[in-house]
Amino acid sequence: MLRNKVLLVALIFGLVPPAFAEISKSLTDVKIFTTVEFEEKNVYIYKYTVHNPQINNGRVASIQIDISKPKHSQQLSSADLVIEKGFNWEGKMLTSTFDQEVQKIGQLMEREIIPVGIKIPKILMGPLNWSGNITVMGTVMFGGSEEVLISPGNSVEGFGIVSYGLPGVRDVLIEPDYIASSEEEIISATGVSENEYIENTWNVLDRFYKSISFSTKTLGPTAPPLDFNPLSFLDYIIGMKHEASTLGWITNKGIEMSLDAKLEAAKKKLEQGQNSTAKNILNALINEIEAQGCETYEGCPKGKHLLPEAYALLKYNVLYLIERL
Image (cartoon, rainbow, N blue to C red; front, side, top):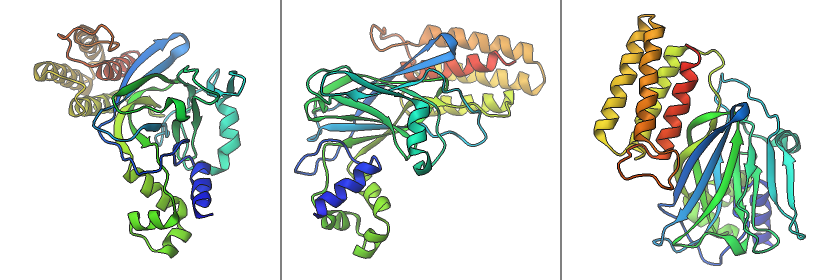
């Protein structure tokens, strides 16, 4: 009875994976490789490959990517955004629109989110496979059935988010194939009292499953500011460049310094009101990004120093700025 209660509450709020192991299996150092494609109608396609390293003793059962909408940002379109929810027992893909899903869970949503479509891996090994959906916590959640969970040493590609939102650095929570066997286990692991667990079950469950999950960063859609200011947006790009370097997405210090020089030069010209000159500098920056970066991991030469994450993050945000100067 206790196990059923924990499972029911957790599933309602999207906190736990759809398949579970009998022994606790925490995750560490899971890799998520991301590329971004820009298509007609200003749609960005975010493609993810998830690798579970051999050092882990548990399987990856779900991936959650933050899609919360920043404060004072633009309201983006939800037109033509389709969510692939998973396959039914006949092998037919079940889908819904973004607007339909938000309408279902609207009153439970903790925060406003970026409109998205969701694509799932097409692995036909059983009736469930991978599923995709939006959670009440403001994330896109990919969950796997027993047959397709990512075992140590293996990777799965084909996870995708479609959006009109520009690339931004987003939090990712990668969850293991595990559920607590009792309320007592959760209380013991989190150090809360029984009364606190009863009064704040959702928060305690959230804390417990995050403690055995792996958190990292990736690219995901975000919305530009509602009141656009070129200088402020350039400062935002500079901040993301620094974060990309910290995350290891820029692999050469000399290239990083060259990018810094162009960004600071463009900032100085904007401060002086010389938008045309700033635009020329930013166009030169785009040329360097394209020369030093790879759009995808496949076939990326060793001499390139911007991983696909840094390439997409800088290129598409700088282009957005150039178009508004």
